[in-house]
Image (cartoon, rainbow, N blue to C red; front, side):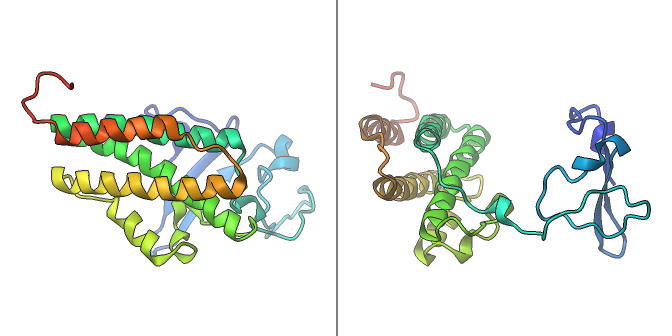
Length: 219
């Protein structure tokens, strides 16, 4: 069991609510949240998948028919798209630097950030192809259902072991896949893709990749 609102390591974020996250010996999992009666009108936080199973006192509001529409992939704004590109390419320089230094844990942590932006871009692509009426699930767990098999295989390659060569390969695959998906999506949504700085960042990464480990200067 975990009670997040009673932990020192993590700050509580449910206000006056209190939760119990429980895994039972028979394999059942229950997340129980106690909500002050004063918040009964918004007990479900607006979650459209909520269903009232039992309301003895008749205190809870009537809910509409449940739907997963809140979790459908949403069309990005041009600013969201631009920020996603910027985050991916900026963090990529950290990965290249970490790999050249042999700081594998550092590089892996930043590769994870890059991959999150890649998954975000893939989610937008899935949304665009399906008129924004499908969900890829939490942490992209349904993504394999909606993207091309070759893209799925490339995404899988971005999950390497803590091995320098494997991580360099994963890094290159992530960069190429993101570039392909983002350029295609930008054309369809009529967004501007930042080719000027992308080309410079890619040139920098390729240079660092070939840089001798004992080099004293980058250039």
